[in-house]
Length: 322
Ligand code: RIB
Ligand code: NA
Image (cartoon, rainbow, N blue to C red):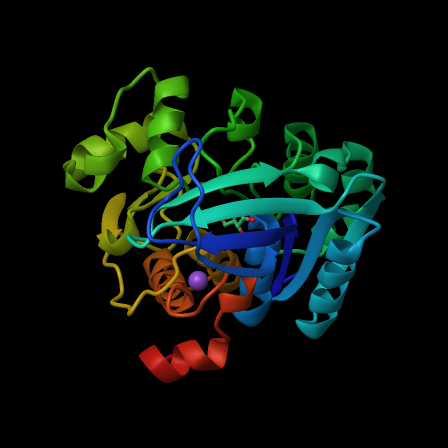
């Protein structure tokens, strides 16, 4: 159905320490600490809900305070939570942030690693009602593969955010995606593994458009690739048979200015907002959907935290207009 998104993915309790620098081996530093809700799946589900889509979130949670936090927050944001109970602890992320904004993260997957394909199967009704199904790589590959298979059977748009970059994406999973949304690092990793191409993630935004398009077409010949380039915005590449309302096969969408204080979860903001925009109005030209997602993600960087930083649709419209 229109206006419904299902996100299948992770929930983490983020523990964040900010210090003057990142700690080196053997070093002890003093800094500031805060904790809050995160996990790429949950961040994207909150973004989707706050960007105006009815949102279901399929995940696995432990029987602990983290699981309780996830349930309470889902209620607060009107998210239809479908959690597989696990004996493992709820997922966690330990995040060190240096004064220049660089970070180092260790994930404790916990319950996230225990989400099974058969639990995803049991949520097929949610996927059948959704215009968009969105997955990331912090959950077992077999489970998110199952989610995209069910989404395909239901005729939903299958969106794969291939994050984080260190997780390998099997060819079968890539083949199931209609829409792929890597950042620079993830794009370089995918090209290395699936095309044998070496590109430098740091200078990707400077590559010429024809070359970027050629890389995207090799990676996902049948679908749309949106490469997010941080403050430089996005590069969009469509399959020739599927221009999604745009007249062009490839183009850039400019980034939006922001007074960034915390970029944690900015990629998740982009993905959740893009999913919601597509679910709300599939007829709108894709370039406009991406522009909205850029604005949404830019605003998320002006608030501290990951899931907690997601702006509301009214705030985005108030800032940038409809
Ligand atoms: O994308 C940001 C997220 O990555 C954080 O919330 C943290 O939980 C990690 O999973
Ligand atoms: Na943020």
